[in-house]
Image 1 (cartoon, helix red, strand yellow):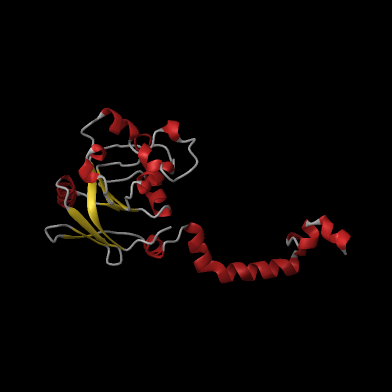
Image 2: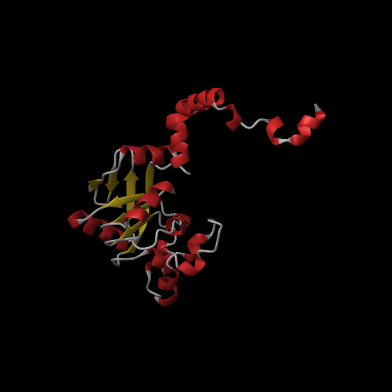
Length: 210
């Protein structure tokens, strides 16, 4: 997972409320196993039927932020919705609110979800619509707007450290608990040696060679 700290770029505005994961990544594409290239299926029906949809506009082709309305990513828990957004090059999604599972899946895939509302969100939306750059500083937990407005945001220390380090859940466990894991394995080998498969135990041919 690629590390995330500072990020500057334009934001694609998808300001409709209640965009669920089937809109983000339609169910008929769920059989595609490879993550690479999933971005072309993101918001497939919106792009197909709405010529004015933001992702059809060339000025948003290289967006690194996505600005959304209320309840973004509700519905099915499909992780492909985040994979598709990430494949577009988006590393940060700013919305008035999120679906709970989608919000969690963002962190697992190197995408930062930020909840923003009120007058501050109106400024973010205006900047996105105007094609202006937003800037992220994850270390300082600040989103900066073109008018020099600095918007603080909340993030758990665990998720912040994971994004800054570029680690998924497994990577975080190995980083934090490797000593505990190794100590457990040594104790297990002493008390339950039959659980530790050796070359001899797993390869009958090795016994014949002996």
